[in-house]
Image 1: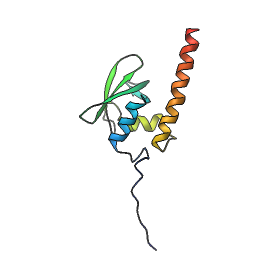
Image 2: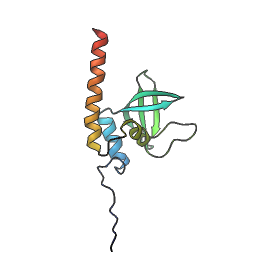
Image 3: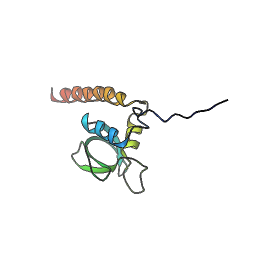
Image 4: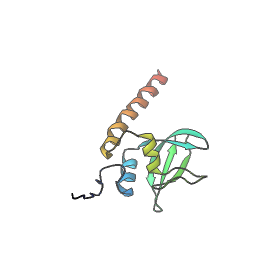
Length: 117
């Protein structure tokens, strides 16, 4: 019996390089659920920093810097990977983030249009 281990595919969320995941998140303005000071907020990915962080903006307008990878420190904010995992728990592949994001933005647009009517 021979057992071989294959490295994880680079297009899987769990094994995608930090640079790939963060670039995708910024490109599609990925929406994330994030807990800040005990409150769950929705945030948008804005830009990646040189120090392995990402700037996000919550819908109230405040910006925060979160790490790209690793576990949240106490006190501290969760990483991009943790936020993606919590926000898109069923997604396995990077392309799923894009398709789910289109649906999420469409729903927000419909809600906004409903408020303006």
